[in-house]
Length: 453
Ligand code: GDP
Image (cartoon, rainbow, N blue to C red; front, side, top):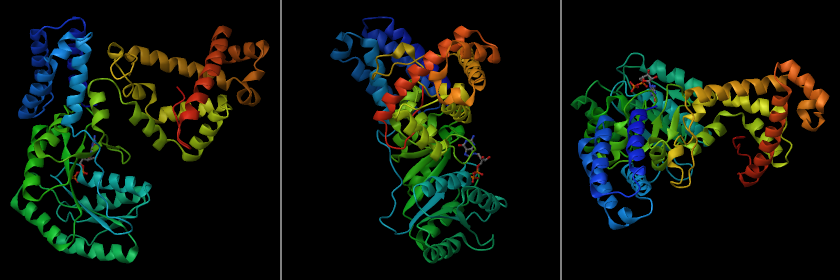
């Protein structure tokens, strides 16, 4: 994902600092220079970088840090805290109108930023939260926009309101609101037209919509791939029409990601969500602290757990949680959980979100494991062998691992083409995992799936 190169560079700086034990002022200054270079290379706005480095340096050269027991780690801690502050510290929710009142959200942005896709993604999120969204096709210029919204709306099971391309967007918005009132929609999301560049016509059109219907939230969609330009666009939109929040798209892939780091500092407006892919489920709420963890390579375990919760069949998840709590988790459930893991992009996909910095253990108590590609591959192979062993069991054995006496284990080893010692190891590991799950299950929220590893 974005930030890979930034993460790598920061990790190098930190490794250097940690290897030093005591730090001199020059050590800190040198590290700050490297962090500055890394941030600029990630396309973070120059002024933002300057301010950031100043803050970190001031704190890092303070007496407490330099004389502390572990100055390298203290610097990492400061960078982490300043990154979180830079991105706005707290998660900002889209403000909805109270009760059953209709909330009107206007989506704005340049053409190709991901507005139409994000509109459908948002609708899906709010539908899950119990809202009844209505998507409104106000982009009357891009020929395929209306169709695209309809197709995506249908995929999300959300109604789309359109009047073709021969009405003024403000009139369409007014008619859509009328429709929403009659139809019981309590969230109206207007997908407006973008242009290749900011121009007067586009701003005038958005203004006209705002004057015609009461817009409660104006959300700007910016494309992370356009780097600093995205942030300039955000500033200009904010000055001209006023925005309430930003959604940064395309943070997946190898974008440099600087926009996500700069936009709050430049515009004063928070990032609400980030787009992490083309699929309609690829929209994540924005948590400054989790993003800082990802950037520093400490992983984002919480988002991973939520993802597991969202993509796993609700009923199956409940059943699994129930079984975990009662210590009844069996090999069939194990197979099911490996299937779910594959849905989430396999082990390596999951690994990218797990704490990746063994070297940083001790910071905030997040001890990480370091898995490179070949280790991830090895782990996948191991899992495939485990699956083979489970498939060699009878249904009764899968349900009741206690049945596994030595002769049954021999049969399973033969069936799966592995050594009996491997079967023994797996059964032992399985029992240990069960114990762990029972503990986690007890602490977990009701009905919420927890990862069984
Ligand atoms: P609009 O002109 O602003 O309405 O942009 P679209 O919604 O049509 O999106 C433009 C392109 O960007 C489409 O191909 C989308 O699939 C793609 N896109 C949108 N959001 C994301 C994202 O978060 N990640 C990736 N990889 N692609 C995205």
